[in-house]
Image (cartoon, rainbow, N blue to C red; front, top):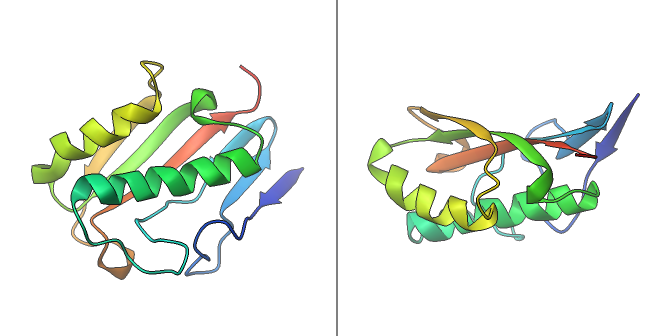
Length: 126
């Protein structure tokens, strides 16, 4: 059985999907782009954009009853590997050396003109 996870503490979804789904002890988040609660795309530094994405993901994970310590996999889409180091510097702040597996893919474009999008898979009990 699956449980839909949605919260009004992050931006509303921009397409027909759920913010996260919990099933069989796993939480799967939808990809998050750097939008604030008003739905405005954060366009400051790539570090600030990464922080906003991670903040949104934290809220969704918490709503599902898990945190970054439960994340086992992330998928990251970025529009330029020129930003890779800066994104990593911000991203690593959220895991305290308990890093999940990850792939990072450079793409031509992302929704709303965003520079990055991250999704996660977490385990309810480790």
